[in-house]
Image 1: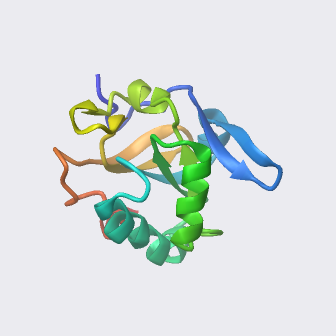
Image 2: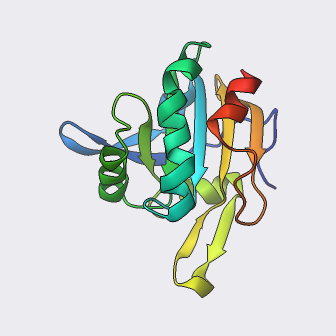
Length: 160
């Protein structure tokens, strides 16, 4: 069943680029004892994700953190090198933590997979944003289809 408000984030391991190269980031490390804004995109360097979704969070990161958020993070079903390059190209450093879900394990655990096999893109994640407080989802904005209506940074700011 798809993740819902009130659910605990399932245990999973993501990957982030660090100063020493790629490193594992568990959901426990990411969410335990913290308030986190997490948003997911179907893919790095894709049109809506690059022109609107990630930029909205880069632009609003300071305002979001000013409302008591410890971390703003972006996750996509891409490898860590692609996520790192995309973050650099979008000036996300220090604002949005870029997380790779290379095999879609986290997307599957949340039940938010997006099957784009027919378009040659494989299995991805649906677009969403959420607020997670100490591992529990307190707000969820899950897009339908390929939409970009409710998962932007402005919506999250209004929910904090």
